[in-house]
Image (cartoon, rainbow, N blue to C red; front, side, top):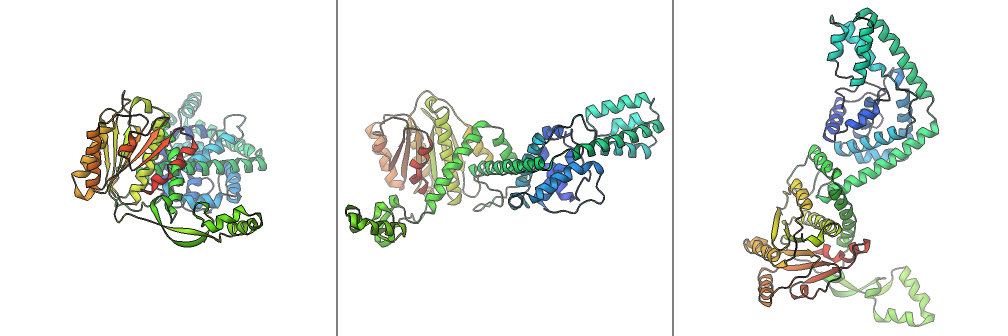
Length: 508
């Protein structure tokens, strides 16, 4: 059960932090975290303080005095302030509800898992104080007040209910008993805090920080997969709130396939970003002039001759180390304008499992490229026919629909490229502004297309100034794809190296 309130514990916490943390906790269904935390008095308040420190104020004002049972939390807070990684976490989370919420949840979960278990269940003195306050300020009987208290869990209500019956619902008797229970609960909490070893706490915090940073990195991949980031999106007219991002991230977090697609697309994105940052691209460039460098593929013949003469090798090695060898300069050729980007995804039965997941990770990276380049993006799912078509206009991407698209799989029995390719061609032909498109076909099967169909496809390509790039997964011949493809990548093994093999694709 997520608490309605978070009583002051160690620090002063802003009402905004309380509101945003509770909103996050509800969205991400963190009931289990709070349920497990009930074994430590004030754990719920500790969580909101961690959120407040990450989101709003790293060094908030301490309560004076703080409740005596908060000693365990104060020890953890002090160590958290000193640990390497605290400032980096704050930089990632400050002013960002989603990042701060995820970090808080992961940090507190790890702390809870690693802290020593109390020898017996610790009673929360603050809940007893609240009950005493209600009894003193109300004319109702203890039994009626107990029914109205929302801060107590079922076990606590049951225990207090038995206590009320033992004193025959007498208010004075109940007050006296609650005060004794409160004193005992405070002593138990203080005794637990005294038993916490400083080095053990330090190690707990180190592990919690490391696992929190790993979780933030994972969530970054989840958001990037659908074209989002932690802050304000660039290149879009949409405003995506933290709540919307939390809902999207939560959906990915609870779906193993989406999580795997995100992980794979993260690796692919690193390759794509590196490739797109390169100013001179051999595959899409032309010789321009001479420059200094150490690119072995572009060295002038006179530099390569040094490798054949042992006495000149030291001179070659020096030039290579200093990037001062003569090499051809290649200037990349960029399109003046870029049309839509269309991905035709094979959804036949043989693509089930890792091939389909890998293909969709590639699709996710292409979505990000389209997003950055302000290009219309379309996904066509097919087997022997077109099964589903999803459009994502520039600046107005539907992130939920993209997740649905990534989960779509029809497991048809066969493969036919023709319906998907001509569906893409028809779409481009319907609007002149969509000409100069790039079509990416991802398949793992062979398909026979008649010569008439191939010629028609080639004619449409030329008329619409369209490129077709094909990725063939498996040990098949690319012979049929060469009839209409501008470039083909044959991926025989979907290992890590497969990602590097298609790096040129990310320049389209």
